[in-house]
Structures are given as structure tokens and as C-alpha cells.
Length: 468
View 1 (cartoon, rainbow, N blue to C red):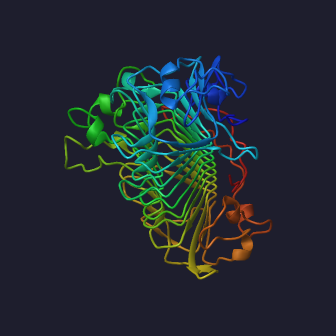
View 2: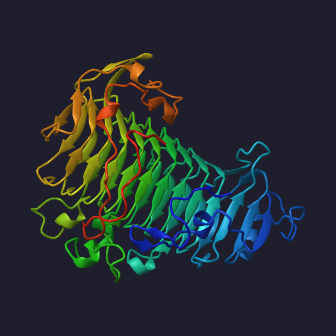
């Protein structure tokens, strides 16, 4: 079943727009009109659990409103839908994996190693949900790409829920030019050195939700949004087709990713960089834990920041007008925990906790050489309020502001259990009552910004340092 509490309900509002997500996600009680049963060696007609057909036959029979029900077992191969319409907003196609009796994942797919080598591959296909699979190997666990970089050619309504991807050579979950997509309650681990990202959302995708996921052990960026303007924008990046705001009409916005919700995730213990937000605008990043990366932490930046390149320079593609609130950043090295550079301005940074720590065996001590935040001269208009900084320093930013707290001491006793390595759960970072910094991060009536940079919405009812 999809989550009981989706981030947005069917026919509700998302970022000031009428939502267009997959109905299987937004309407927990939704029931497909038809079910086709498949099994690893199915040779029936698929009309009942006792007469399952093969996976390929079941997918060929799928039409809008169909649930393809994978019976418990081990499968081999790569599946999906290519150059077909898929489902619709009212009648999505659902690929559902049967659970074991204890509720754990009951369907394991060993992915193929040829062609796209994606366990599930969707090209120019919209409104398909993938729910509850254990996907191993191949290049991608789930891959979804639109038909073109133009906004009208994007795919819409892909949902990946409750799924494990493990050991993909490229990326666990990958999209390109995919709007109104949802990634929720997924475990994404051990992506290898072919590309190595845990979740990688690319090519100007807009209106995405990334929520309640656990990502670790990936060799590239643990999490990455990259609009790729150098590839997606025709005739250079300094034009309206490249930098138009999503939903403003036409085929513009190729070079930016707008209106994302990234919340309640645990991004941790990566081999390389932590999380990249590249040309991400008008988005909310809240209640996440970013911890223990190999290179740097979380970066908001743009690839089009060189003013000497007249064809490519475009400050509108900076990662601007974002809300970064109620997150926890924990670094075990001296790279930045949070970075705003390359015209990534007009962002709200509120009620976050930054921890610099040195791990010595099973012990933790303060790390004054850790970098809480890095900024440059192009980020003059960001707002920093009620953040707490423990053991570290700023780079390029003066501070703290009067509402913020910075101190150089750190005690593991202030937290449930500051993790020194794997295994680790997000609750390890939960501050304990009485920790000496909690009273400095109060609830704020932060209402967010609309696509014109104006306040919108109702006050956020999110307490200080509430973790996923």
C-alpha cells in the first residue's frame, strides 16, 4: 500500500499549483480497476493469483488503471515501459510487489546487465508507480526519462515507494526530465563507481517530492538534483527557454529544477560528496539529517556562474529562493556542511543544527576545524535565523547573527547516540531534553516564497530539530 499520509492529497495544492502527482500516492484508498498477476515462471493468463502470467506478458497487457501484481519470489531481468503513454492522472499503472507475511519485501529482482540495465526502465512514460521491490545490481534500480528537455515533453507522475535498491553500478534511482515525481520510503544503498549516486534527479525536472528515504554507502553523491543546463539548454544558457520558472507556460525552464520538497530523509555515510542542489529554485529542504560524507556536505550552486562566459553565464540559474529549515548537519571532516555559492541567494536558512565532530574509535570529540557554512560574494541576500552551530567555523560568512548560537563544545550526552559509523539510524541524532542549545531554536512563522519570491502559505508548524 502507498503511505497513509502523503505529502499532498489528490487534487490538493502543491507549491501554489494544482497537484499532478500519481494518484496511487496522493489517494491512499485508491484501488486499480484491474489486476494482472505475474510470477517468475508464470505461464497462465494472469487473471488470478493461481494463474499468473510472465512479467513481460503482464506488462504488455497493462493499460491505465491496471495493477501488475508481482507474486513473492526471486526474479531476473529488466522490465519497464518504453515509448508508450503508461497510465493517466486518473488511472495510473501500478507495479506492486507482494509482501511477506511479516510485511517485509517479498519480491527480489536481480537486474540484467544489458542495454539500459535498469530493473525498471520508463522512457517517455507517465503515471506509473513502483511499490515495494528489492532491486539488486544492474546500472539503475529505477530509471525514468522524458521524451525531450522541453517542458511539454517531460514525463509526469512517476512514483517509487517502499523499495530497496542495492548495488547498482550507476544510480539507485535516476530520472531525467521527469515532473511531478515522488520518491518516498525507499532504502538506496551501495551504488557503485559507474556514477554512484543514490538518488539522482536530472535534466530540469520540476515538482518532485523526496521524502522519508534512507541513503548510505553510495560512491557518488548521496543525493543529487542537477538540472544540467549545459546539456539541456539550446543556444547557451542565457535565454528564457533555459531559465523560465516551472509552470509559467511554454516549454521553458530546461536549465533549472523548481518546486521540490525534500523532507524527513536520512542522507548519511556516503563515500564521496553528500548532497548537491544544482540550479534548484523555489524549493523546501526540511527535517532531514545530512551526516558523515566522504568529501563535502550539502551544496547549493550553479554551473553557469562564470561572468566571463557570455554564452553560459546566467545568474537566474543559481539555486535561489529556497527554504532550508529544521535540518541537522553532522560532519566528520573539514569540508563544508552547507554551502551557498554561484548566485544561490534569497534563501531562508532557519532552525538548523550544525555539528562538527571527530570520531576516534567509538568516541566523539569536538572538531573546531569543521566548516559549518561556506558562502561567496554572490549570496548577499540569504536569511540566517535561529541556527545552532557546534564545534566549527564559517568560511566566507560573518556570524553568527544575534538569533543564532555558536559554541565550540560538544558532548555525545546531548544526543541519543551520536553514531561513529554504521549501522546507524536517524534517531541516533535526536537531541535529548535539556541539551543546552534547544531553547535557541524556536518555532518561526516561516511561510515560504512563491515563484515570484513573495510570501505564501500558512506558518509552518514544525518544532526545532524534529527529525524524520
